[in-house]
Image: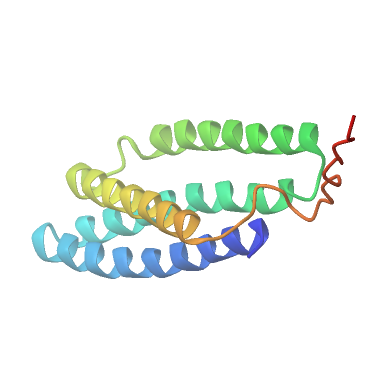
Length: 144
């Protein structure tokens, strides 16, 4: 399994998680608060999945480049996520269609779910520390 395969698998499982959290969170939010709960759960799920997808997509892109470009892409994605997060919170803070508790709980569940997916996929993968490198031959000991 390559690093690219790992992040594609993360994206696939994150999509499945997003559907599950959107359905369950939306249903619970709708039953407890009404349409505000449904919208809150859907928006929170979208935010969490967007952030996880940005991370995985940046890694898929970055592994194709050398080390300096890799770190530039990953840190650029982190900065992009920070800016998006601040903008989303600023735009959503006083929206009448959002219920803050349903939004918060759904966001936390989605984030914990994406953390669990990352951990399970990475721990379950078998990627060598040395990737397709030729190691030098073992030196012969000369007899004195």
